[in-house]
Amino acid sequence: MRRLVPAIAIPVLVGALAVACGGGEEATPTPTPSEAEPYQRLTELPDEAVLALAFPGVTFEPSAPSDATPAFLVAWRPGARLEVPGRLTGHLTRSDQPQLATFLYLKESGSGQDLQPALGLSEGLYMVLVDIDGGQPVLGGLDVLEASANELLEVALAQKEGLLPFREEVDNPIANGAVRPTVASDMDNDDMDELILLNAGVNEGVKSAAYLTFDWIGAGLRWRRIDAEGASARIPGKAVLDYLAAVEAADATAETWEGSPRALAWEWLTTTPAEPISTELLAQLAPDGNPDAQATAHRKLEATRALLESAYGLLSADWQRRNPWTDFVYGFRNATGVRLEQMLPPHQEGERTLVEVVIIAASREGSISVDRRFRVTYTVVEEASGWRLDAADAREESFP
Image: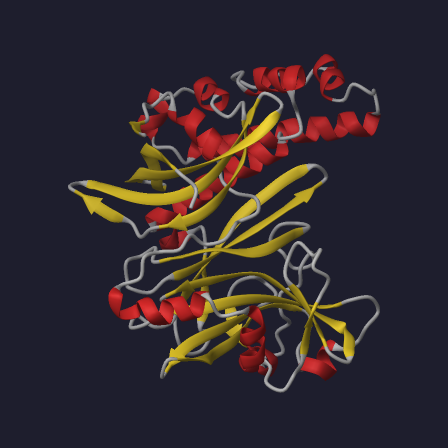
């Protein structure tokens, strides 16, 4: 059922939609007739075939089926482990045909020292790019995410310049986070898709989430990180991603509070200006009286408010006038998170700039969490500080 979301009601909806700690798989876009067959071949290409293209002559064995992320071991080198956190399909480095990007975490399992002898690579996050040539998949490139998380480099270039690959839980922009592919989207309408990766983690009970966006620049560095500041901040879709990331982190930080404790937490969150956190409130959030648990509750309350303030700051001045802080925060009282499935390029309708996303929203209904799928179209406006969200139109959709 389609519904236009009024200004005050939208936080309730987006609270139920709020973005994604785990990233999620890319929703399948509709390919044009000319690219339908290569697109299908790429989406159906098994991980084992991608590994065979990237590392010819190396034999891989699937790891335990119980692994949450598909993983492989190198035959005869049990310390060399590859995890496949996800894959994206789109026009990544070519506008004339789709390509497949498969991401790999290379790790040493146990005390093994097998990665270098087996694959000639260090631990880190890599991307295998696959093209279709003559109807068959071929290797398009092997890239490494540089340790500062600023750009994706060709492996050969990275090794030549002595750059270490990105290491999970060491070099992450977010402490204890993991980088996972989320969507490929043409955020600047240049007929080439950007890579959007979700960097999410938990630190001392506080959830963090940020979208790392990379665009293809060809020779040299090949991929470049689109920073949140400067000219790149003028991309409309970045405002939507930053908003959803802040909301997801806030929802996930507060997710464990239920019933009366959650209601009391939200009563404190909606006050303006913020009141001191009382010992009575902490006693409700950590009823066992454990000082460490109360310190965690205090930290989570402050972080949840700060994250919601960041999200609120990404609304336009006009939307903030229509939607006061108390109403905005109250809209997230039942939200527990969301997975971003798809993001379409920004487009114009008259004088309006629109950004459309598809998300799986999780919200608490009684004692259970319920997932729903929504297609949300945000209207964004450019203010002095950058693009800001000005309105939203949401439609609930059935799951595939």
